[in-house]
Image (cartoon, rainbow, N blue to C red; front, side, top):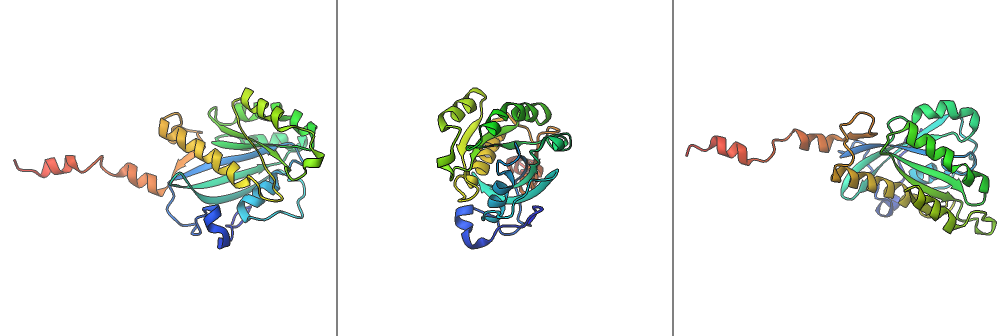
Length: 234
């Protein structure tokens, strides 16, 4: 696993839809970011998604951490390459370089900290300016398990997401609630945009690469009828 991390355990493979074989043929590779202020639980979200457990000894990320996981989304096998960026201001100049060519991002705030919520506009501006202009972003209100300490309501965050054309859900890295869905929902939206032609994996900086399976399909002749006509002697 690469989290630099490891692949998750297979005891919950049905729920997690995880491909156990890292060498399995993949349709796509997506570059993801996890961004937001320090202390919002970004590393814990990534750890929960990769390893299916809560990261007990979590310290502030220094620079950038990396994790990856192969998932099945809408019938496609997709490898998510996820960059977890430091939320502290002193690392912003370093982490901004990782935005380039990202296809998707989880924009994270802490529902118990209005300060992290108020900083969302700055993070969103960075993502849309420095990453792919078509980056798919899902807003995640983390620490949903701390309902008694809530400072940001679901309604106001939902309105912020709607105003800025973001998807939105609340998550808990501690319990795992909606963590899986956050990453998969983002990936599903990217696939839908590929299918509709809105996103082109061959465009430089899209944050999307064809995997082995898709490349094989692209290299195949467009149907066997043309070959059959050439072989026909009539």
